[in-house]
Image (cartoon, rainbow, N blue to C red; front, side, top):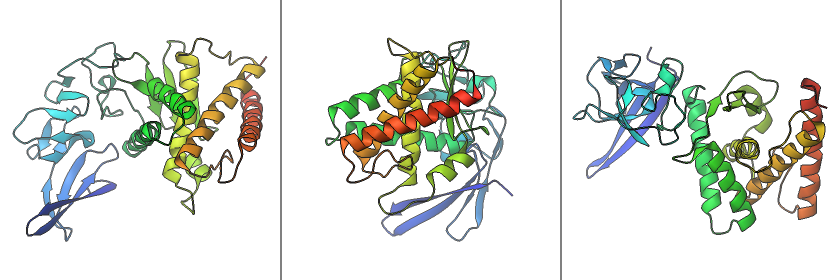
Length: 305
């Protein structure tokens, strides 16, 4: 009745714990709240830009998965506060990726969301959440004491390419059917689109297993596309993606950073880039093979010189 997604929250108190279930639509907007036995205790609905149309604004998760305070008219969206009555943020976009620096979700909140206040994600709410979780895994790996300087440097580049605060990068995340699980497109207007075909991605990464976490492996795919973003948008020498040799070098570079991430988090690679016992030469050979294979496949779909 209310949506497809269910989240549970447990609040600790002296007398025990209180369990609350939140039912949301695909964009993460909470439409109903239920107690521990599943009885609905509150219902909510919202106009396109987030002002309440049914019920009062609740305390906690609300519009597009952001947090509301019943005593405050504004919505907390991580990087900045949002006014649902005007459909505008209270401060400018830290990344300056919108023409209107106060606009929410490119002025299209029905199809898009901006749960961080930083960049536009046109994928479904659960995919956007997966990408954000993957980026957090990458941050954690980059910050870990055991991570080598080489790997840390590569992961910092990936994170900066997806968008640190106050940087102009114009990156959009989408989730549309595609020929591959993930692909990054560089547009004529200098923006970039990273697309994750989640049906193909789920097939590629498979279920969890011994020494293998498919959430970390999705993060490895996010690393791969992030390396492409960095190489084309922020490096001193971007690859010429119309030439077969450069396409192969670009893919080898992305697979190499992906392999370093897998090694740093000790997660077996679904792309056979790392597993316990692999030597640096083994990893290099795997990166070389996968880079050639990916370039072959890409140049079948586009005209490479």
